[in-house]
Length: 197
Image (cartoon, rainbow, N blue to C red; front, side, top):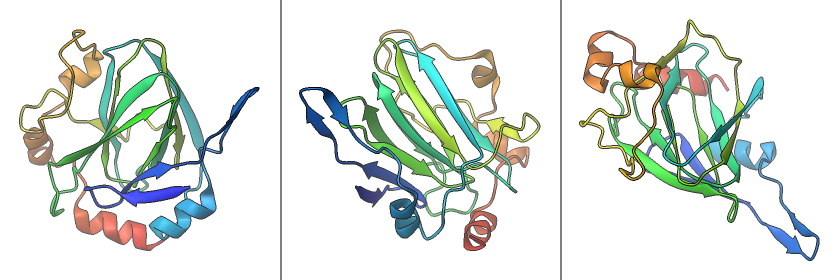
């Protein structure tokens, strides 16, 4: 298993070894020890999520208010998707920027993003399944979003087929509006939160 930090600090791409044989294949998509060594802290899993999407579905950009926020470890056991990490931490050197990892059922790459980062998934194939390991449970009062259609973000959303977004994601504020509304975490508070382990 190999871990590589993305262009967005505190987000990582994880590549795992896949062992195919005449029966099928075997892999371990998550190893707590390897992730902890790379990131400097452990991911304590409080909830797992599972989404199934048709081609063109866009989910995000989602984040949870700090504290406690929500770190995520994301992989794709079926189909293919773009996993997009957006730096929404005010004051971050990469604020407003994003990085993309293709996750699929061929290479089985995964993405880890720390608390305070925005997250979006775009399904590239019909019946794409994405699994999430989350550091905290779902709390609707703390769940927030930034619209993925914000032109200032320039997120990679393919035009064909026509993207399908939830009403919640379409109605979410732009990045600038979220700043004005005081919804976004600061880079300083996120770094302090990570340092607590």
